[in-house]
Image (tube, rainbow over all chains, first blue to last red; front, side, top):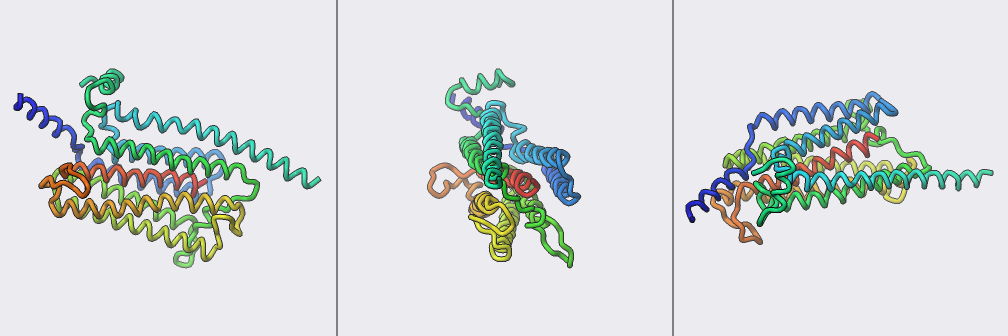
Length: 119
Length: 227
C-alpha cells in the first residue's frame, strides 16, 4: 500500500513540472517581437479606419494568445483548467457591449445638449 | 485520465481536486490572475466608454508619446521600446521556469535577475514618461491642454495600476531569485510565512504572474496607445 502510494506520488510529481524544449520559447519570443513591430508599424505608416482597427486587434489577439498558450503553458493544461480560466474571461464581452451602448447613448445626449446651446 | 468534455466532467466531479496535474499554488495563482483580469478589463472598458462618449477631441497618443531622437521626431517610440523590453523580460522568464525544472540553479538565478532588471527598466521608462507628461505637457488627471480631460484620468489610472503590478513583480522576482541561489528549493526548505516545502514550481507560479503583466501590457498598448 505504502509502496503503491509512493509510486503514485512519484508519477504525479513527475507530471506536474512543465518541461518543454527551450527552442519553443525562443521561437515564440521572436514571433512576439515580429508582431510588436508590426503593430508599431500600423501607427508609423498612419493606417486609418477599419484597416487600422483590424490590424491592431489581430496583432493584439495573436500576441495574447501566444503568451497565454506557450509562455503560461495553457496549451498543455487539462481542459478543466483551461475552461475555468478562459470562459469567465469571455463573459467580459458582455460588459464591453454594454459599455459601447452606454457610450453611444451618452455621446448622442451630449451632442443634443450642446447643439441646443447653439440655436 | 479521460480527455475532452468527458475529462472536464470527470475532473470536476472527482475527489479532492478538480485541477489535475496542477500544483495547488499554481491553480490559486491562475484564479488570482482571473480576478486581476476582471480589474484591468473594468479599467479598459471604462476607458473605452469615456473615450467614445466625450465630445472634446482626444489627444493623439502617437504625438503625445513621440520622442526626439537623433534630431528626428519619432512617433510613439518610447512605448515601442517599453513593449520590447517587457516582451524580452517575458522571454527570459519563460527560460528561467524551464531551467528551474531542470534544477539548474545558477542559470535560473541569472535569468530571474535579468527578468527583474528588464522589469525595473520598464518602470524607469514609465517614470520618465509620466514626468514628461506631467511636467512638460501639463497633463493632469482632471484635465490637460491637449483636449479631452478623460485622457489624463484614464492614462494615469491604467498605466499607474499596470506599473504597480510591474514593480511588485520585480520585488517578487528578486525574492524568488534569492531563494533559488540559496538552494532553498533544492533542499525543500519552507518559505517565509509558510510551512510548505520549497519547490521549483514556485518559479513557474512567479512566471505566471510575470507573463500576465506582459499580457496586460499587450492590451494597453493596443487600445490606449494605438487607438
